[in-house]
Image (cartoon, rainbow, N blue to C red; front, side):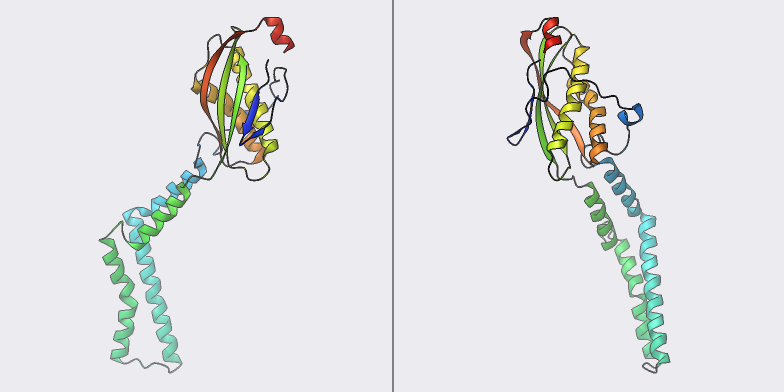
Length: 245
């Protein structure tokens, strides 16, 4: 098989071996992980679930409960402050003083009633919506572009251009090598059993278990692939050439 190159921003990993890759012997429990890591793309599934859990507080009943809690706590605080001032002789419980502290204690209640009628533009709803939107914001990712050349069962050379998106920060040369090795093995296995070129969906599905292995090893929050282009090359190989390549 001819050399396959994986590159990103001018960094070439080059050919990592000319012989057909061996399929890694990985336990099925790892190979077919179904967690928040894979194929939720970006943002990750766990982040979307967190946003959905926050958005539950936007329900009218929850908003009313939040405003009621704030009003009660504020009234209790004002009462405690007033009681402390009276005990220290710093304030006298006259009708005017009681009226002033009473108004102060019930200000949040009046504000809550007014905010209820302007939902979802009230302060509490706006804060909850902003927090949920923060969890829905896509993470910044690094793009690695690779070109793989493999052979179909018919002997036709098949080229696959893939973009990998991941959230790894730091020196990613070892990550690139692992991505290349596992994805190449998955694509080689799939194409070697097909007489006709597989679809993009089939290619991405074949690489998914491989990406799950890499994501688990490097503890990546985001790692997914996108098949950019596929095309057959008008060139065939004899069986003995495939064995020796």
